Length: 231
Image 1 (cartoon, rainbow, N blue to C red):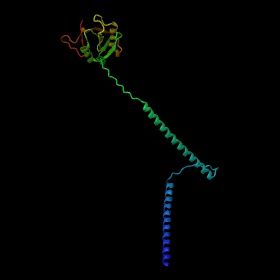
Image 2 (spheres, rainbow, N blue to C red):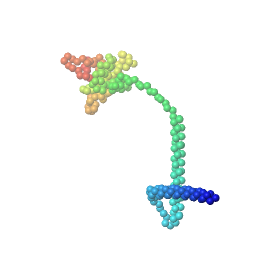
Image 3 (tube, rainbow, N blue to C red):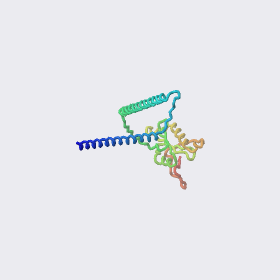
Image 4 (cartoon, one colour):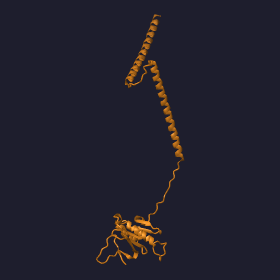
């Protein structure tokens, strides 16, 4: 019996030691938590608050708490409104994209006419008038595009543009090019000359295509863009 009592006492001592160890462990956790809170509190930046000296400390604390709660509620409402606006905008964008129909338009490239690389216009009689932009084009215009029924127009001064009035196929062969078109071509040739830029008044002249030649008299030389007029 004495042995049993002794064993019982030993068991009680072990239970007490176990409880003491648990208490010590909880105390250590509590101390660590308190230290962590103190460190966190020290790391926080101080906040400046306005106190009403006519009110008690509790009244001031209550006022600050209510202000904080109102600010938190306002922030929550703002976040909800922002999220709702974003969802609405997303739905609107998706609906708009669903209604958009993409149409591919294929435009055939227009074939460029030969005279579009020169200065050109269509006269009041519907006749094409073409002028060279520089000496090389003047040469090309006469050599390649001047036909036997066309009219050659030139400003009455050196350096003027060579101008060709194209005889239209719709015009009868016996009918000459209308004088209005030739007048317009003369003004066109004058406008594209060095005299126009210098504000010098000068006239223009015209001849038939068969009067224009690139053959210079014996002993003479025709430069690029230069022509002999015969007759």
